[in-house]
Length: 244
Image (cartoon, rainbow, N blue to C red; front, side):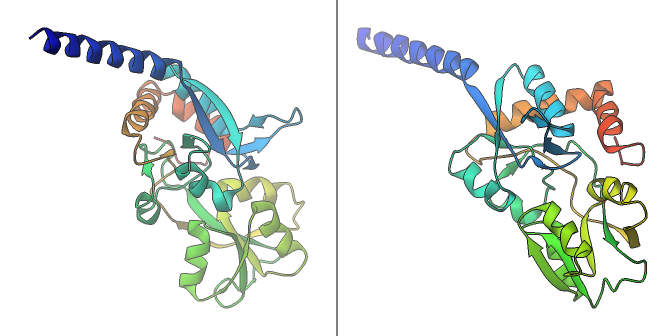
């Protein structure tokens, strides 16, 4: 009996230490830093954008200490799984294929349209060459349409491919392309209809971290409930971007 009580006390102490450790743990947030307005590196060399402000607010609401880590898009999921950071917050659409590898929080943006942009409104987006970022839902969609997919590791390279004549058009999130088209002085235009893809954007976490996933999901829900998430979407993604 004495040993049982002692064992219980040790377990309780151990659990208390684990709980304290979890509260003091720094959660590392992985992002690309190259997909404005969602995430980018500002003039001070810091992560900035919609997801920086959102991530900081979610960490505050979840009472977590967080730090930011940047990672190339094409290895962003493998490096989450291998432990280089604890969560991805990088404009990542929720898809069944990704959900087989990682766990997602609830979405923090509604499904947003994807779009094509080109140098001319009559660009061939069905039978021509279309640039898209590697490992994106847009790249998968281009393949499904029968167009020739030209993949690049960064979103800026997909736009450059259109400007230098390598590709007839680029396909990406419309929120990303809108600023590029608007600031091109008429050089680039949207082509065809918007294309709804994915189930909205969420945070991705390792499947072994359900507690952390639930903390972030609860924080996202609280921002939906009090309206601050919609305000942030309008601030960074614009009045035209879908909101809750």
